[in-house]
Length: 321
Image (cartoon, rainbow, N blue to C red):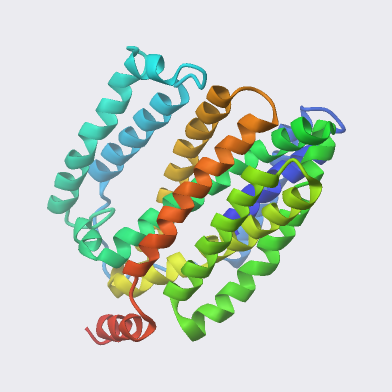
């Protein structure tokens, strides 16, 4: 649902723009109120059997790390990436974020109830899941640029360009439940392999033939179907399988964290490619070709995922242990 919401955003935004940009912000207020009141009604009021201390230090270090990373990436100028990275406005922030990574690991190793257990990442399966989550976030970041490609290639208005995302949104909505059902039968490896293969085909399709309506819609539908395999159950399933029962809630947050990192890095990277390749449709297509190449690398990485039998064995070991 998190992934679907981020994809629906540009489409709904295109509708709201017809009534003025202020509605983009006003509409969030009643939605937030409804969600808050609904949560009071439907969420269970449960407590842990054992009260564990809150990992305040871990939260502080991780929060600072993410803030520094976000500020540093957002200050990179798309048209002058090298100069931006060398400027005092950017590199101290990125260096600070990098320095805090080992600090966070050290803090978590000493924590009584760590926010994120570092030993979890000793599992190759978890490391690959984090990598695919970054790739999914990177692909999601590209959605912001699809309307720009439509405007440059077809000369449509901003609102019309947002509506052209509808096939992609439908593909994600239909693909996610199907991927979840198939996951129970074939395991996460095959689902992720199919998803990344579709991403490669869709991204490269848009990158090479996105200036034709057939290439545009075929490519975006393939992207939507591929992303539904990653944003759906597969990555969460890996984390739930590899994590101990007591830390499964935190493990699910790992997927969201790395997707967000991918979105953050993806926006800066795509903007830089578009700026360097020149304005117009060719710049956008170049960006999609670059992301397609990244997706191709992820497709190769799927060979390292566990097969279904090994996944089930790991799950049984954690359940009985």
